[in-house]
Length: 145
Image (cartoon, rainbow, N blue to C red):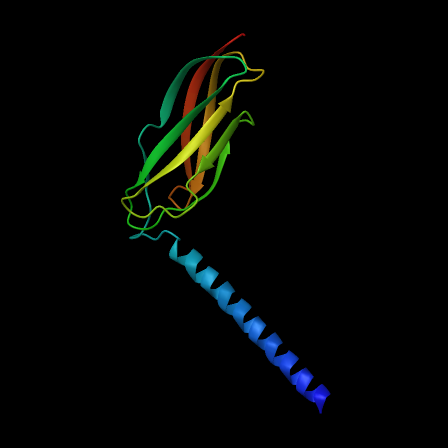
């Protein structure tokens, strides 16, 4: 009798766990679908300044810049990834959805170690916008130490 009760309880726990996982998976699927742009609902990433001149720095120094943007669309804007044109530029960005009318950011750090001369770098933010790639850039002149 004890074995039957234990097996029954274990079965109930397994079914409950599977149902919870299905519910969580469905919620994630519904959430992702809600962030997909449609013809009448879409986010728009409107950046303050798409290109920046960061001036002159000495080789080995780092410089930071924060690109600010506003979601001028009518649904939440979600950045899925930010890539840079080389490993010398490190991004950080808004990880929470940027609601319509709100502001988000993409901050980059450029490390000039082993760089010299005029340098141009590109940053691409991938989001649920149309098109999905949003490009920013900067230039900086690096002088030898």
